[in-house]
Length: 297
Image 1 (cartoon, rainbow, N blue to C red):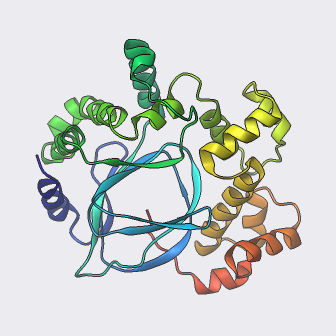
Image 2 (image 1 turned 90 degrees about the vertical axis):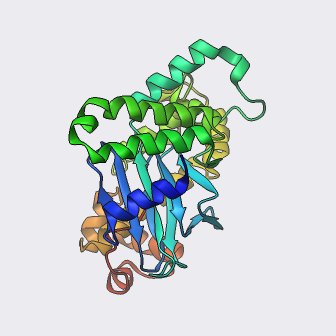
Image 3 (image 1 turned 60 degrees about the horizontal axis):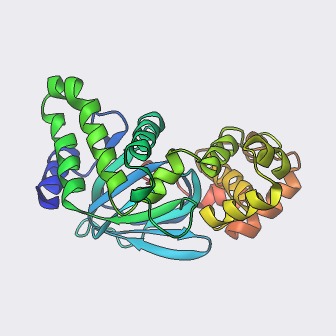
């Protein structure tokens, strides 16, 4: 099976409607034809497979461009800036977005570790990477097509959907990003658990000591491993996550004070200072100059 067959299916079902639900849990098609400048977003554990066009992401101040050469695997909730600056009607961004079911992925990762053991684990760093890329190998391509082809039959989708989704997850675990995925979802996934705690309690005050204690690490070890996985210190990560969530809320029309409060800021003046330092605009200026974009990936 080829990427071209996947592209044709997306084009038939999605048209130029932007982000489209497929009916398969967590799976969406996208066909975006308008250029969008980079803006704050929060990536959840997911896989993005681009079959046409390219997208831009800014991670830790560095620009990265992704296209159809490799699929993108995000294993941790990550604050990021992303956009589609080169997209146009003649050069659309098309592909498949798969929100990873953490329960299924964890079951598979642990089962794989227990079955294969340490012989399959790669050498080098023992921490997961928040965002990685992987080659479009035959196993991934075939599993992805088998999954999305289910949309042709509601009966097939209902009966085979979970099985085909597990097949795709297994292909991801065996691919270039598999090592990082297993470290995020498998045994000993302390950093992934800490990020899940942070993401679920973004509006509450939390100390690094408390977080390190919750996952059973010393502050120093936790700080080192966290930065290895995200390229940010825990404090930088929390600040970026809060400000990105606030920026998205403001674009959607939320009052600046309410947005600041909802992401854990007590002082509006501190929120304004940190927001402008990160984005170059005050929160009010941001709300006036940025339009809501329903198709952001």
